[in-house]
Amino acid sequence: MNFKKFIFSKQFFSILLISFLLCSCEERTYTPKPRTFPRVELPAHEYTAFQEMDCPFKFDMPVYCKVEKDSTFFDEKAPSKCWFNLEFPTLNGSLYCSYQDIGSKKDLEKYINEAFRMVKEHHIKADYIEELPYSKENRVFGMIFNLEGAAASSFQFYLTDSSQHFIRGSLYFNTQIRPDSLAPFYEFIKLDIIHLVNTFEWE
Image 1 (cartoon, helix red, strand yellow):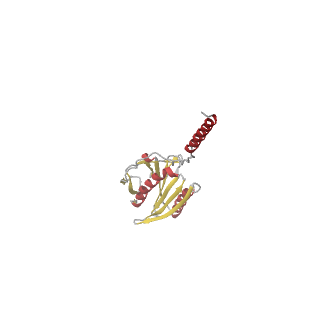
Image 2 (cartoon, helix red, strand yellow):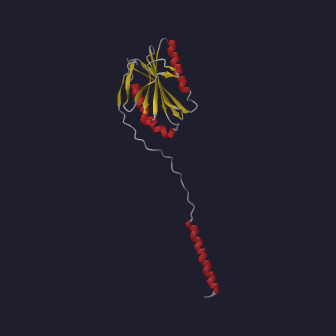
Image 3 (cartoon, helix red, strand yellow):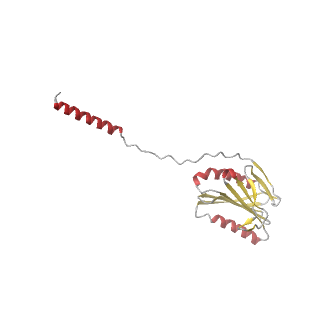
């Protein structure tokens, strides 16, 4: 074989091989997959009657929650026997409910101001706080607070008859606040708390 032809053939083969390798090593762009969370089966929206001897009211509560009496307030005795929590074990959340007797107009103003103060404590973390006035027949008046963002409590409310009774409720989850991952649970429980408010009656 002619030596020059051999050299040319070898160079040609090398160029061809390098070209093939360069073409096969195209730059690829990778898109990160969105963060996923374990799928949780939500319970059905079914209800049962809440009627406690120490509480002057009734309402429908979800069947998947349980009532726990709360007899302490910052390590002191609770002001009323009608302090309780609605626990949502499968969703790791709690609705803390505190009832107060109204003895005077000043008491009512104090309780309402306290409810607003408790909501405003979440103002730093909340992206938005929606205040929804509430009223219906049989003297049930109040306010619903819908908090969006990384606030520790995403939903609160108070109800009163403006003369004798006052109750406040606040929803908390017993976990680190991650708005995106907790959103389905917030929305699910909010529907049941709204049902609770809509079926609330003084006795």
